[in-house]
Image: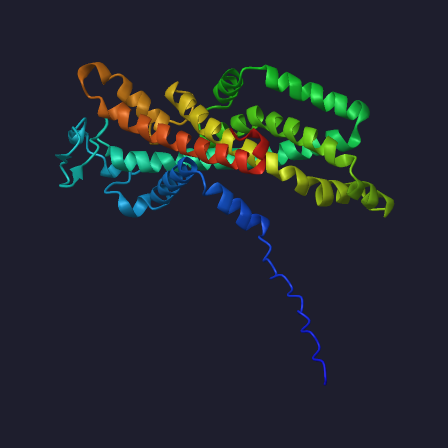
Length: 308
């Protein structure tokens, strides 16, 4: 009588788990915070409306030929002399506030992003050189950084713009001068940690040049904190540009900057024409708040230890 062999269970290989890419993980973690998502949606709405300003506004506030003094200080919702409805009212010279705010947002966002990118590029280079060179070079660079950070930001920017004159390029230069030190200190601290790791020592043992080691191996690992600083400094640059324009040393009165619009309406506040300053101020507030909400969430995602 033949004896049947017992059935041997074939081991089942566990299902291969699809590895999540760092970018997908970053997006998924970011979207878990509803407040940050709300800030991101608000920021995207602001950026899109600012880009589409020439097509969705009834007036070009840059073109003085379309501005009529007869439309001066029209309340919100009233008809203008040209026949369109000024939903947010007009300012003291007859510019439609809705149009002026969207064009002003274009200037504010451009100034904040451009000055931030230039300051970040220069500050990263300085910080990397200080961390990699060490010795007297690092000591000299960091003393300059400390001196820069010890000075009041608004005071330095005010002096530079007052000396250079009004204009977008002058404001961008002043903002770069007052911002680069933040990036230099951040990158220098991160690069000091990365400099002593094994992959840097391996690159040096292979005979790679210092420039290649710095910008090809150390720099990519320093970008995470730079992105966080960039979001914070962009919001700071936007508010600083508005402050300088409000004080009369930023953009000229003929350009619809948010700071200029707030300053133009300040003299009418006591007479009840609140909309000339309030609506540009709200636009500035929503822009800065949305950028800060996104920046705070990016900081928490890149460094979970800082998340509450």
